[in-house]
Image (cartoon, rainbow, N blue to C red; front, side, top):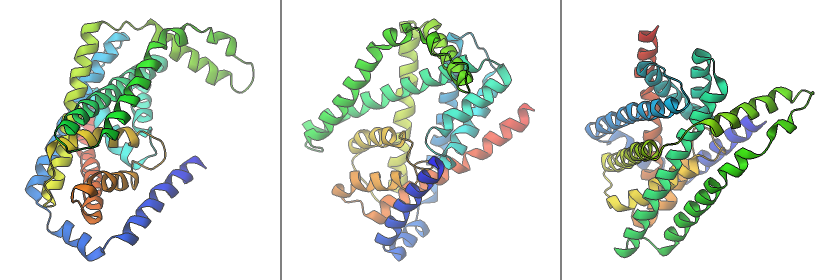
Length: 305
């Protein structure tokens, strides 16, 4: 039922967008796209996969898991590509399942994916906040974005500050003898793995730096995709909007962000001259690049075998 709901959200938004756009203008946007720019964007998409695999490898070491980098790279390539065909959160599920199947430590792998995701989320908020402040100072964006990004960051930091108290709760009392016993048992092991993993400051800073690099490359990808469509918007605006876009896309309300991504792009960039046709084309082209990047992942998977 949840899956059908997410499909209906994606298809519903896409239907609304395609009903609103001028199809001939949208078609011209695809026909006249600069393929050289798209190739550059694809290279950036591929480079992100390497950084994400290296970052995840650092996180896994905190949990005493030491898989080969090639193995992680294959999983990251495949999960990130297939994740754009699945409901929100599908990427993390695929990553956890694939590595757990090979390493046999489900709770620790799930905890590592959680930590990896949290660090990535923090990097998005920091970039969006600093860019919003700069955008306001240069009269590019309103103070609304400063309030939104600072509010998100404060909420994140408050939740993070409570992590020790949440981890200290005796979840063992939740175990039941019924059909939920397996779920409660897995949850307890997950919390224990988070509780026992050390988080040295130097490692956290290194993870944050790698996450910042991932976000900046994502920003560059959208900047290039818009340029490939012949639309040139200030770089600073991408630094404000793209991290916020990915935060919104983390919400499990669509299939791979389809529809939501295109709608949010229009909401953000239309005041700066980007038409609905351009924003729809940009979102769909970004989605296409993610799917294309599945091919190297399959090659690595076969090579690993």
